Image (cartoon, rainbow, N blue to C red):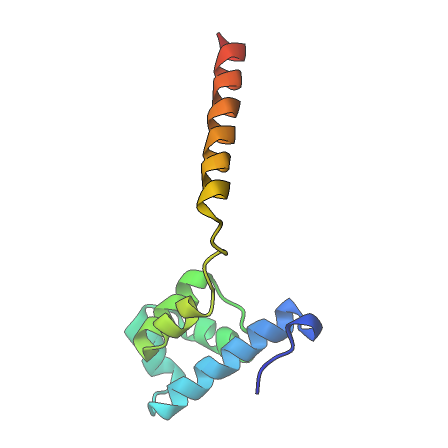
Length: 107
């Protein structure tokens, strides 16, 4: 089942991630206390992440690494679309021109 991103909210998406983390923890027969001890994340933070997806990105990634799902999370964020070589070359020229103008103004 995939989430419809257009009808999703940040709170719903975070809660969904928290639920998936809980499922992975349970599949490994770990308690929240076990997971907290193995990740240097407090037990209350593990509970908040699982209940509502509320936690720092660092804490979520520490848990994901321990559960072996960190690559899945990273892979879920695609890289930006590639531009053509001509577009990249034009962008490089624009940046150089902007830098040159800024330098001339500062002198």
